[in-house]
Length: 247
Image 1 (cartoon, rainbow, N blue to C red):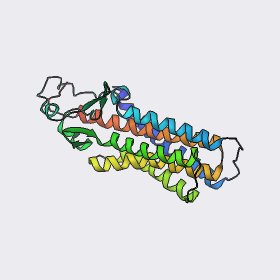
Image 2: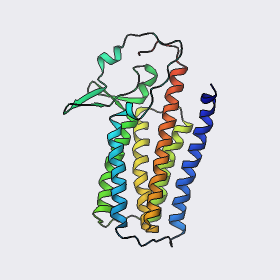
Image 3: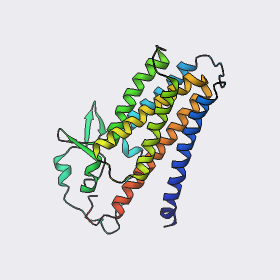
Image 4: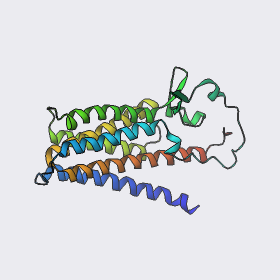
């Protein structure tokens, strides 16, 4: 019981730390232009690291059971219920013999706002948004950092918009209870694209590999915090539910 009572406080600490860390690093990149470390291959190394993070994130989207704990069911709801929604909608698909999960929420009406229904399949709105944002960011990172092509984007604007997108992604999960699937999709997609924008701005202003690595780390902390907030919300939904669970 103590662990459950302490969880909201630990989540609040995670939210504050992730927001402050990203905000501070963004401010450093904008207000302290003399952090250049003159590291050779700074942009290719930065782009490679960010690309690996995006690829790992896109892969994890299809295997949520390996990255997230299952919500704790209400103590009195361990009995079986008729899984009608599972019979109608498909939550997994097999590609080249590999089973990919695209709808991982319990078949309960309380989770209807967490998923899209498309072509007889359930698609997690948040995961779809994360995947879309990572796909866009991966392509843009290759263009900017690996190919080093020119782009007309003010560093200050990129940093500010990017940091704001990441922070909104975290804070919205901390303070908002009602989020439909469309809103969940866009919040998560914008959050990942915001990570890239914050990185582009920091690289252009500070031109420091160390600063770039710290920016990527702070973005990962923010994403991890968002995942923890989502898991906590799922557990709260299940603990307060009075209906029968589908085990």
